[in-house]
Length: 344
Image (cartoon, rainbow, N blue to C red; front, side, top):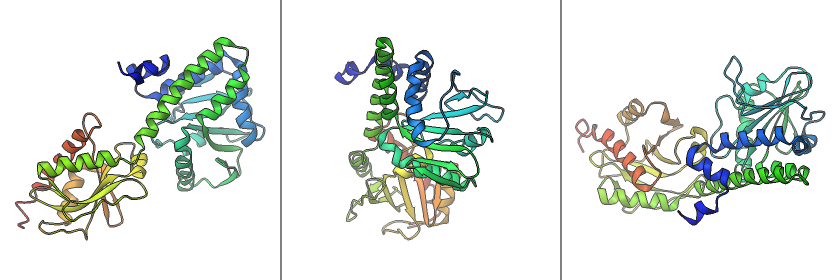
């Protein structure tokens, strides 16, 4: 057993062994503490009072995974003293936004009175997620106004959308649990899980130079990737490099990490950027048949943005360079079917 494994708190270790979706474990632990130790609810109120006027948690139970008839299932909710759903909490570590976040969840909140949808996220993701949430409000036709940083009110309603750090909430709750030895001990277990999940998130979101270079080395040795006279080209969303991609049928690509598409698709950090004007001799280059075969075989996972076709590299097993390289070779096989039809 590694030093990393032995240093994990018990809750983090059990979650890692038996339930890799850390968000769900953290939500259940948070609801347990809020329900078992009512004083801890003051920590939630401490955050709400700064952003959402006249909204405070009630004496009702915090419920988890409570779906409605439209299958809208917030991670956690609490009803107000009037029996209406007043507070939704959504937990994030690594997962991207689902189709219900945030517009359908906001629509589920009652029309009358004050309510809020609060997201919890690692520090490394708050600034990233917030503009995406606001963009979805715009796309969903929900005009909004800023109340304070990371908090917006839906115009003409008492509904609010906000996001805060996990550690900020847990610190607020901890201040209200002073004197409760068991409460603080259980909160410490949740802190340990959050720290572990945030460390994994931070590690996963590093630029990825080592991964890209390892894959490039495998591709060159296997003969389906050529980088001769082509440079590394880091971009704002991740490290990558230009290359001639394919064995029998060759196209120009940028191979690298795209954190924006990773967040949007919640699938893979590694993508191929294919553009029509990237044609490197010797090779067959880009044409409509390349686009057609990739879309037919890979479906909706291929994303067309302007003149660029973004092709995801989804490994079947594991996340190491070998797994990504194997996924790239499968794409090469698709392209090679064009070689018979397109002589060099």
